[in-house]
Image (cartoon, rainbow over all chains, first blue to last red; front, side, top):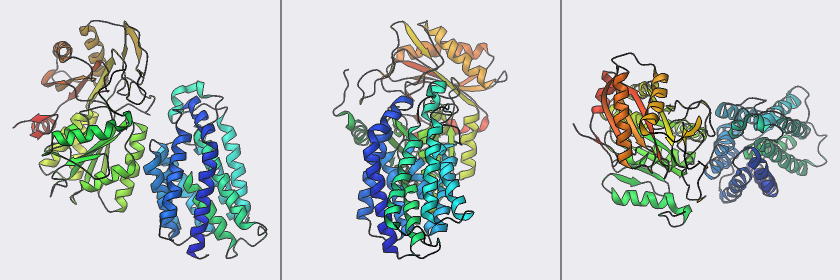
Amino acid sequence: MVEESIQREAIEAAVHAVAERIEAEKTYLTELDSAIGDADHGANLHRGMQAVVEAIEDAEETDPAALVKLVGRTLVSEVGGAAGPLYGGSIMSASTEFAEGIDTASTVAFAEAYLAKVEDRGGATVGDKTMVDALTPAVHTYKKSIEQDELPPLAALAKAVDAAERGVAFTTPIRASKGRASYLGWRSVGHQDPGATSTLYCLEAILDVATEYLDGEIDRDATSPTVPDESAEADGSPEGEE
Amino acid sequence: MKKLINDPSDVVDEMLEGMVSAHPERLRRLDGTEVLVRTDAPVDGKVGVVSGGGSGHEPTHAGYLGEGMLDGAAAGEIFTSPTADQLEAMIQACDAGEGVLVVVKNYEGDVMNFDTAAEMVEMEDVDVRQVVVNDDVAVEDSLYTSGRRGVCGTILVHKVAGAAAARGDDLDQIAEHAEGVIENVGTMGTALTSCTTPEKGEPTFDLGEDEIELGIGIHGEPGTERVEQMPADDVADHLTEAVLDDLGLAAGTEVLTIVNGMGGTPLSELFVVQRRVDQLIEEHDLEVWDAWVGDYMTSLDMEGCSITVCALDDERKELLAAPADTPALTVRE
């Protein structure tokens, strides 16, 4: 496990990357939400991530679990609605997986705990046209790539992002059966889900940060002291952002 | 649209300030929040009973703060759930070590934020139980809900749970009494006009000059059907029959009825409806134990009403008759 100060640096980098990506996409996210929701997803998430950036910069602790929990808590208080508890509450709840620090195994545990909480709180499963459609394949792919295929964390994360992207595409042709869009019934068909989309953006931003950190080190052994940690962090923290 | 407001984004804050200045002996605001609590919260030796939700339903929920009812009430923005950190602050402020019962109206945002708050306080070792009120018989799923919506029946849950807490019941017993109300109460509403939210400044939905909407939600979300305006007795028939159909009560059952104003309805009209509701209850061989008429669960300035029927047993009657001293509801011994 790398030093806490480096873990903190990676969390900060991930938070900034996600905040920037959400800022860049906020109008598009709101457009998607206008079609099948209440037209506030981009603005709410943007406001939440700006607050997260400030909170993390002001935070004095270096303990990764506490920092990730702070990310979640800030999203809970700033995003509101259903997205606040879904993104923020799930990050808070999953943050305990980093109690012993961030490494490859704990990022897998974090991802699974985060997904379980989102499913539990929102009551949605794959095919309901929600963020779960992007999240579930991403988390399962990440876990399988690490545990069965024994890929290095960065490669596993890249595969997870691909899986999330396919999940987002899958939300367009299907009918919503959870969340605000479900009220539209068949009229929701043909529209891409904003929650699944923002989830993908968060993962892509994390992957960018991880790639930057691990550039040229992809071939390293997954159990090497630095690679897994940094990539793990980048991975964990972004999930936090979702 | 004419409104007695200043900046629309200040409405909730200024309303809360006004409530506290009108009831300084009863209400206290938690610093830096939109949470009001009883001045003496947490009350030693008593389970806390709290609620919360979007604003715009006044006197719900802060109007029911006080002895025999609620210890805490969290106000979100208009028609928007309070955030989980505010709910967390409220639950903590109302916990005297005996635990806290949280009364939630069934809306997705509310349920998710309350769930998150419950998890947050459980980490701090607060014993917390939630009950979710879903008394609206009109629609099964809606714009803001999966399952039935929580509406005016919530006030009876506040009353029964608050009275049980005041007499010293423990958290499990209080939750059981609350669930007892939820299983035995039904409500259905109608709108004659749309509500107008301060931020939007125009009606939430369009309703024709001669149309009313049956099964309306308390945020102006759609109901079951739009029909041509009809006499008060026909409206009362339609709403009451739908509620009684849902409850399926045995002859002789004692009930409490509420004719609730949506915020913009004259009291005279509510009494006209009450008169017919009373007749209907008798026609169904049920017995009116008590009848409440007034604005309990409103939808800003919406014109219209809802009708609530709650089946009673001895326990619920005792708890409903127990003293309550709140800004919006007083029951004397």
